Image (cartoon, rainbow, N blue to C red):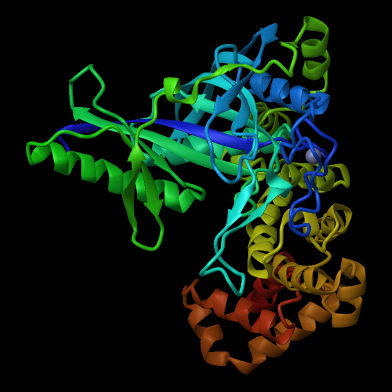
Length: 482
Ligand SMILES: [Zn+2]
């Protein structure tokens, strides 16, 4: 394996976040009853004419800008001809010779800090096909069903250069791309619902060789896990073929999830097999400078810029900024907590540790977090101000998360307010010291370690609610007097 170098390029399809389909007014809503959202256009009935969705173009332009690709003033929809039951027109409307944008790039982070630039060959728009359903009906052994709700939904296809060298780089690329598309609101990137899908072109070559080996297209890599497993399998398979003296066949293979292997699906089709030609029903797409400028103005801050700003403005570490900006909704939450007056370091650590852990355990997203940013800020201010200890704070937070109540209510009802009253702490300290004359003797003879024992006893008597700093001061004085 070490003598070979894998060469990988990814083709990612992302569903654009529009309310209606690419060329008709049907809803794109996921999960509706089969064939509810259809009309003559997306059913491909004779005589129906497509009309391009402006919002879809704007989102595709936005994706192109985020990937620093060159947007072409004039692009054109073409017909990609093939027959399949989920494609009643006999062709898919896609872009071929004149794609919307070309020549972009995406920086990915590999092994911690290092950055690598992955080239983007092209970005084009197309419509999705319908969905064949082979399972789930009483007579599924005899019939297949077709749900046309997905037919005609707008997609962008983003094709990378063959710049990726390992399965983990491929993972990082898809992850970073997903993050950019989510941030810019181009796509919801919901992989379970098929809004983000990935195919890979994979080849191997002896290390040091500059020519590419024969590539195989691997389809159906629709989760991060499948992507990693399928690439690892396919690379090993190709090396095996070459090592045994054979040659790799150019073909399309399918990732078989249950079998954990790629399987030959069909011999590779070439572009000429599709008989592409410009779609005569659609005018060329003209994306002029005013539209690009308008989209650019509405462009949200991108993840890399946000990380840099968090480090600069809030003084938090780059790693923490990376955790907080993984999702734009999480970054917004953090900033709302900051606006409500919490300190940056404490907010950063509570959100990235306590909050994310509780969300994960509850199977929730930040979007349905039961603790409002202002409520968390309220709690953090109490911890920072010494009204409650950090340990009690965590208990309060747990209750806030479960009940949605405010910190004040929980602290009052649970009696968790920190004891800072010197008089009552001193009383407890004296009791503790009186009870352990032998430890007092050890302390007097210079055993500093035993001091911790006394602190522990005072904390135990006060159920962890005594202010630790005051406990320290008082204990030192009481022990000196003992
Ligand atoms: Zn329709």
